[in-house]
Length: 255
Ligand SMILES: Nc1ncnc2c1ncn2[C@@H]1O[C@H](COP(=O)(O)OP(=O)(O)OP(=O)(O)O)[C@@H](O)[C@H]1O
Image (cartoon, rainbow, N blue to C red; front, top):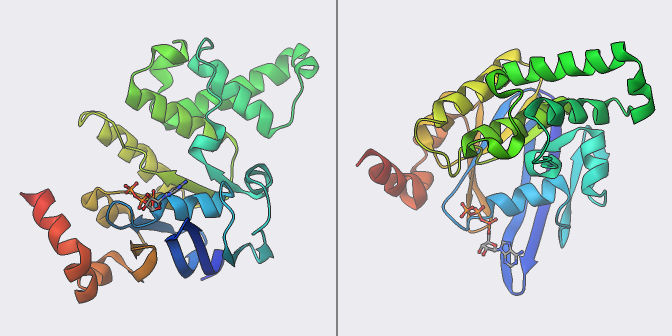
């Protein structure tokens, strides 16, 4: 299987604290990779290194074989690594549909003047509607963005991210802060993207049932290091993982 992202000895420290410590890993193309680990394990920092928000102290990242270690977040997005909060340029006083249409336009690098052609405008709007359908938010297309509930805002972010049509999606706890009723809809959205089969998805999550259900590969971080990686079954049966982390977590979540 081809790797789309490879990291080599990726390391970053904040002060004396090594938050990501020598991570060497392959993210396979068109697969679903989850990143798990206890609080403070370095998951978000690892994402920040992949998306370019942070620069490593040591090590490298390649994307489709090209060294991107020194590229800015914007350049990485253009190359095909999309991360939801990078594009959270949600305009609160525009409608949901207008927000997604603007994201579609930005992907197509279309300036305002071109929109005088009604057909171009309509084409982008249709694409935006398709995306809203995909994230189960079509019924809110004409609501103002700032009138959305928290879970709906996360769906809008995902629609805007999908508008960029990046090869890789980095999703950092997409269900965080959601009410229990909102979670299944987001799960559904993520499952649909996975089932379409052309996107590489990397997900940080704490919800183990979600990870076991969706993942092809699981990376376990612990104190900034890659403790284990493998299929969900391999991870569940890995004794080191169980004693370091999963045992406690599972007891907690099934209690
Ligand atoms: N900008 C920063 N400055 C200083 N320390 C930081 C910074 N970002 C992260 N850290 C520290 O690095 C470590 C890893 O943090 P990180 O947020 O990556 O963990 P995480 O696995 O995503 O945790 P959580 O599950 O709680 O989100 C933590 O000890 C955190 O306090």
